Image (cartoon, rainbow, N blue to C red):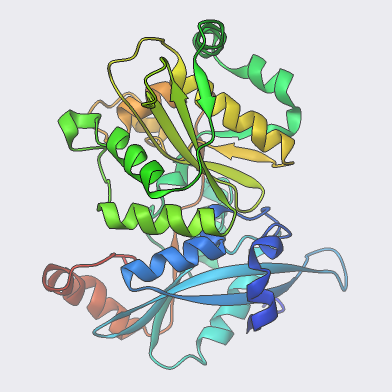
Length: 359
């Protein structure tokens, strides 16, 4: 039995510095662990629980690593649940699992803690977590399968790693005068960004798009916290952007969260130039990685029925797919959890609309 990690709730001073603290996590922190993400998920009826975990490091006597982990608490008819998006991530997961189990057992009415270590997906890692008493669950995040670019290599090597087509598009758009701006996060900026996102699929938008109010909440929270920014691209002097992206900068990984463009472009390559500009800024800011946020799993990359198929054809020109672990359930009340999974969940989510994070 491993020595259990110490787990406690963060104090107000730690929460006030949360975004700085997640950068010190073993995985460098990520958008879905950030203060702005916690604030945004209240829109879905999920309450943030900020946890501090001190975990012993295997093979290093007396050494510990501190992990700041965001849990999102939801309520269903049979109890409460916690979901820790893309976390917690530790060098040695066994003490963390034991520590979370001990801490969560003291929480009244908690059915399950769903965790999602941000580690490369391998059969060995999955088996290791199952052996710790966790139940493998589903892929919860679109970033479970994604393209992650290494920014530590610097601009020159990163650019050289792109496909010839992307390099040609960036150079061509730059030569032809495609202009990139970083607009202020005003309501007009929000309106323009959302309009460009809706140009996909005949005005319906991308598969899985949320309601407009959610984007206003998301963009507003991240820009207010200084961890999100827009990039707009212009291919003429009309003042109307031809393309736009929104990236988050919480933690050491920048995430390409949203994108859209008008189909009537006058200069090709604008979308590639927008992303390259955001990557250059991320390198200047000392970030470690750039996440293009979502592709099909590797075995479905050529499947035209997958909702991310079209976007993946563009993203894969920047780099290969990285696959991370699925989520795992730390079940605290087995009988209630089994009843929820097999019977109640399907009924309740037909009656009560909301985010199905306990799945």
